[in-house]
Length: 398
Image (tube, rainbow, N blue to C red; front, top):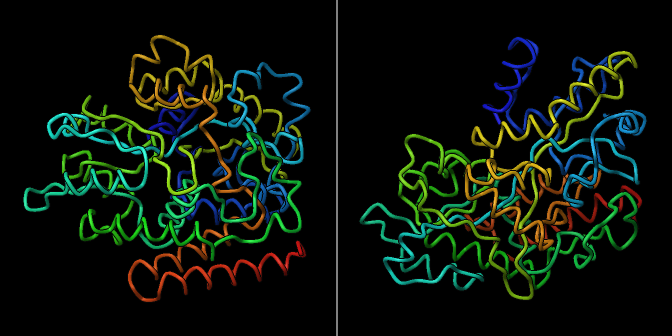
């Protein structure tokens, strides 16, 4: 993301006109900016799961009037990806960057040990155990297990592999209007069999992970795999691009990208992530029009194709994915395009409800405590269930 925004700076203006902050600080700044009488920014990038809260707290303005007169074609976007910017049938954000959580695996090691790529939780552990050789500097798997946002994401994704969202969503639906959720649909579903199976899998992952897995950040985990010290990695495709492009990569063209292997009672689907470009609600109308012109350029097929060619492997437009030059630049483009055509890309694992960041915060604390052994799995699930249930009751859902 840093490189992509650097590219925008070079094409649009000077460095001082762009503000780049880490994801947790971005969340704070997005909602702090909404409290200002006039926005400090013309355009803001928000994480996809924040949309519900952004709309209900008047962070962003509707884009309807601008889209009607623009060249942005919603049909050029995968429906699930375009829908990440929609709330109550109104478009508030344009997907600028899409990333998919994938299981990256060293295909050269699979061939050397005559192993099949894993398709379910048990096979992930079996393959990981056979390749986990710490005495040789090789770990079975790296994944996002640090306290807070990283481990909360992992729990939600793995629980999704068990066929269940963290709240009572109808996960079988291809498309969902999260603005219409109410009542029992907002009730947390953590102290369940799916929750227990998820934590069991995470404990088993620990046994084939680096010893510092509960403390390392996203970048350190990426380094383990990229430098040849891990056989598998659960990672976002935006980070996995470095496997193919970083000059320090020891795994270039040696990686196979898989949809998330399924758990008990679930299917193999891949979580969608990424960013939406929004126009702040407090931006004056004359500035808002100019802001949308900038969004139109940044989200154009031509701009996205350049990003793909320069190492950003997932553009949310069909026209870019179908471009032969873009597809040839990295195997990730073809991998994601296959998943999209099979409707294997979903975002219900991290439902963009107004209470999302509170759910994430609670899971990041309680699930981490379970994996460190501070509390039992059942206690962690019950505590998380109780805390989220209290939030939903106070919000008046039931």
